[in-house]
Length: 222
View: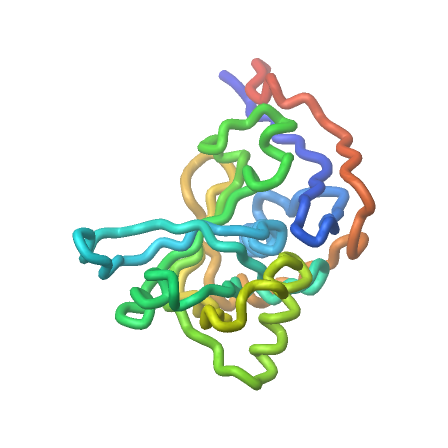
């Protein structure tokens, strides 16, 4: 008989803006909505999956990496925003069929590496957000928020060519799935997900100073 010892302290996450989310603890394992929101706000890129309509692959699933932000550091909205160009086939696909899914994981931070966790280990938590992609209208309050959310986390976007037709979009979430512990997936409702208010201890942290806890023996005999 073995008892699972699950002790995790400290998470420092790097962003394109050279700022870091800081908190003393990961959210509790039983607070799945907060854990999902935490991971989404920590991530600054995602894999967006959809059904492609590209030549020689029409009707097949495709995953593509995109830079992502749900808000400036310390201002989580929970909604994943993306900045993409219609020169890319993916937004053209999403115009035809907006159904999509976004996957983000703590493996995008130093957390899993520092704890010797394989990306598929449930303790290296990941979140899947399923929904429909929506292109945001220009000159709206949400356009301005998406711009701030992405440009503060990904500064080079400011210099991307205006003539390439870049536009902001988001995923309207219909389902939330999270794997953060042994025993299978968890499914917080969308209202539960959005009702979370993240309150990091600090808005930013000047450098990564990780207080590692050994995780080599997470399974220990009684």
